[in-house]
Image 1 (cartoon, rainbow, N blue to C red):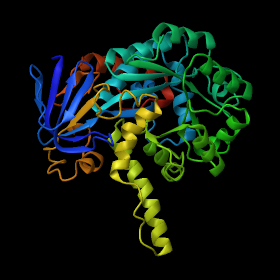
Image 2 (cartoon, rainbow, N blue to C red):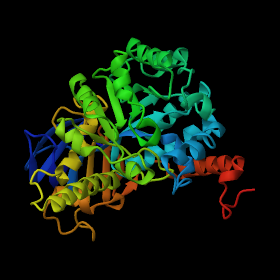
Image 3 (tube, rainbow, N blue to C red):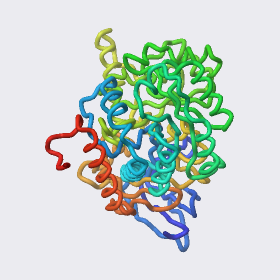
Image 4 (tube, one colour):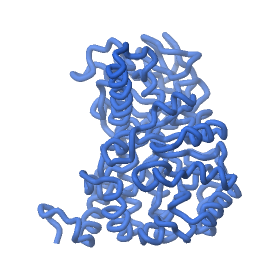
Length: 456
């Protein structure tokens, strides 16, 4: 790739409030960064990519995905959250070898890139041995994606690790991974700690893991307030009672927080990750868009598990959009009044999938908008395909019309990873590895083997 690249003539949605949108504009990339955004830019010696009629956006940011589950995609299509704990965490997870984690992370990250997701927070609770996190990190690295590796617990025993667990994440191994792979926070890949939190762990374990994260300068990401179990734990309130709340925490799902807990999150600067399709489908609860808006929080979006839902951000934006508007509309009908003007908009959904995601994973100063000086994580969506043309409102085209097939170009850190609708990667190798892992994992888990699958 040329050291300078000019995306020319597209509908440019910058997600930068000062720059706004350009009906017809250019994006100039120099090295790994965005150099300029504007109409009719000149750039001698640049590779020019004609994006006339297409839509140029910052890359999507997935703020929470269990990427290791790629090899068992679609294995729990009808699962509730309770089913998932048994069918996935207690059945498949203990079988995972390091090579299965590598294959899943490589293929899963390439899936993200193919769908226009340029930054992925990998919530990696599959660290059955010290070799497992090494494999996970290598898979992410080999894909070329911008990644936040969130070191989580092992999954060798559902009872030991997820019900009032007395087993903490191994501090020595977390330190090893931090020192080996993430000696600074300035790289293309960064690190967080993926904790289980109150209710899932005993208080002394929670305190130990929070203390470890803060000792190492690692942000914390934790599931709270979802489903029948965690919805009763009052997890944020418990964390407050322990004196552990802070701006370094991302709360995933948050479907069943009390008003007091929402205020605690707001007051302490916490961030929110919503996985709307999973929450609607698996019984976590209503995606908490309304309380986020009420408390002036900036929710982000995430995929969660491809065992049960699609792995793209288009699905998540539409799930959020529909799930929130149906509630607002129903309340208006019930009250026999007009639908409020301030209900959720398509642009808000795109914000959640881009700039809010950057904010949530602590990278807003680097990515999330097409702002000169930020890293060049840029996506081009075709505007002349049968399902996107003709473009009237580019934001609406992205949020409500486009899908993965329309993602034409994906640039991460200034490098093209998808061109003309095709990944620039060894996809055949990734598919071979992840299929081989599927064959092994399913063959070892006879209770989950579909009759049609040709595995001995």
